[in-house]
Length: 114
Length: 109
Image (cartoon, rainbow over all chains, first blue to last red; front, side):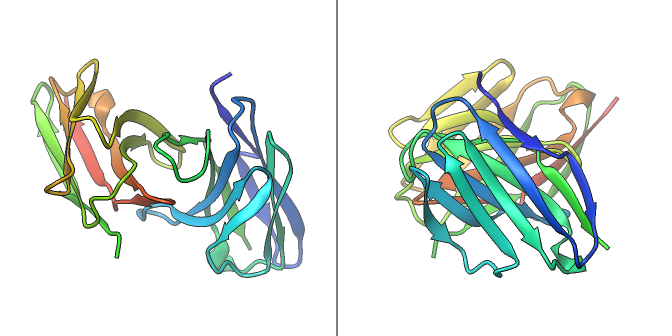
């Protein structure tokens, strides 16, 4: 298995809702990442997990809460989002953090906040 | 500051042309340089990965080169096809990955 799987593919949520994005990989990668991408912009790093521990938090608002329950799974919990949080959320993995390995990206979750 | 720049921002070519996309990075202390393809509203598909010790990588009609000393990478696409139309992103790997803004390529039949 050489893929990163993200679910759901599309999500529409109200500003008072609580929802979660899920990311899964079975390549044995020990680094996993969340990126946010607005239309016609490059992906922006949000969080990095290395060996199931949060390694980098790029000053992301607390309404985004990441979780890494095991080495194959990465969640992003969403609560009280704003319309400007609407974007494509991308998950990626690599064998290790900060080394000369490439990243494998999932197909993303298109989030719309109404 | 570690910045990645891609030129041009957009490119339109007729089918069959050979083309070059450019990527430059300010900090040469990269682990690797990775080229991705992104179709509208989709995720990123890795095309080529060049390690810092390598000069180039090839896959089918694609060839990517890396010159660390000058902070540049190029992606060469031979005999372009309409199916190549997409946004191409380069990313330089440091402790995290820094992306360029992308080149939006349109190949006209």
